[in-house]
Length: 180
Image: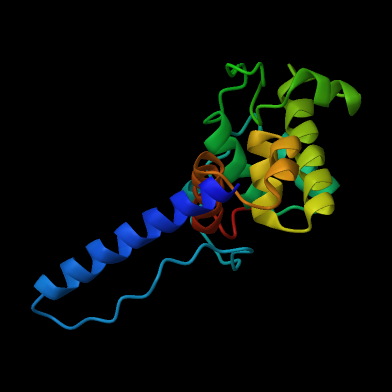
């Protein structure tokens, strides 16, 4: 864990040095705000094409959102990052379907990982369990991606792969705010 922190500090130091050097070369004086990743994006109205759920999967996503209390946009963002809406996707770790659920996880929820409708529901219920467990969206998403054991072992410190996954989901989630 200490090594990870040192690596993260080193990356931050290099990023700051590059930013300062780039700023020194700039002829304009601009206020640069740090990037902000949303915890809960604001809802708004979107054009229909900005809610990219394939029509055949919309009922499954709507049901899962209603069942778990998640915003539809969050579940859509997870599906985009996990499988790009490929219902028969299988990962190298044997996670399957639209929300890339492990067969054992779906079985523990008494749902079929290979059926798109129940795969989405299994993924949403598992994500709800993780959010209730960690009480933080970033940790729940990281645990969904890397497994809760890894998050528990790292004591709330996200590794670079989990950080990238969380950032990707949250960016898509924010872009889809209001998707319904």
